[in-house]
Length: 446
Ligand SMILES: [Zn+2]
Image 1 (cartoon, rainbow, N blue to C red):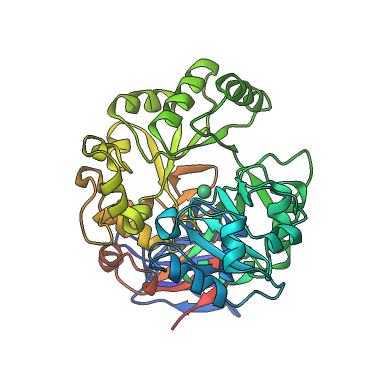
Image 2: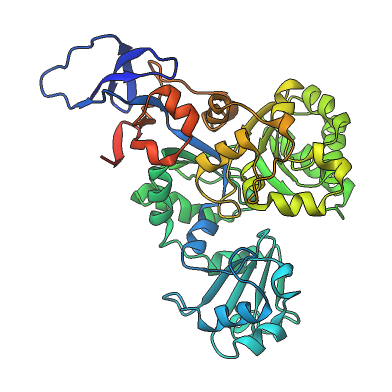
């Protein structure tokens, strides 16, 4: 296939030839050979396909058929009850709701939910993804009817995989193709063999057309359609320090880097301390890094860890951060440019479905840092449009090292219906006209 007359981000006008899933040549005036498909891409810019460095495919699929009950979706307890009671169930009979936060209707448990919905099985996921609430019918359906509160913290993974729908993975993948996403890093921790097999099959069948890199232990088994990165671990503020340190050391001994979820400054301090003690491994990652005090920046740089962060949360929850986080800590919130200034490798992701799935809105948040009410969070941490895009161009195993449109690379590409200048100014999924994975055109918009 020959893509003709397309701009690189540098502004250079080139032709790009794809063969056997890779880029064979990039140059001025390549001649079509007989029988070759030709895309006349005049007026378009070509970029490597986006890679979302941290999201959750199965949870995104489940969210497809869920009712949204977050603070932006329902107004109060009465509205929450009405929304849930009138929600249509999915094919399997579950009433699923996502995005819940206590500001909507206070703490939830099985009794509260039973009063709203006494008969149909109900499952409400907390906005953080860390907790589910079920009514009695739901607990019965999930096989845990004796559960006292119906509050399933960080959910037993057995329950989680039994409840997760994979039928919508194709819809999730379509939406990502529409945004120019050709690869994703699945960041759900402790995936079981059955969870990994479901993902592997979904890629093998072509339901998921992106390349899928997994932050999990491959369990000494074969998953031909997946690649594996660092091993993800969530830590809480009541972490058992010694156990966590042993886990990091053991994971490193197996030759696997770690990816540690650090949302609070405390979690980051614990992780930095442990990595300083046992030594960092190339590829070790910090997920989120939502709050980073100044004095931790040099330590992160020394360790050589990669930070994978989500400025999209500024655009979605920025007003809550400004209200809830003490003013003196605002400069530590969702840093971005400051990582680069400190010599720390950084990349971005959406954390979908906990953040919205559109990486372009994350890029705009990285540049503009605007909350929903248009206040600015931490302007010093803003990056320019071209940099914001580059934060989604890393490779799965080197998130901070951007891929380029160059000979020998995978033909994972995205054609943008605009000049490079407009691309970097608009940062919009609306400009994505074609998404190509391994040389196959998967999405085409005229
Ligand atoms: Zn996540």
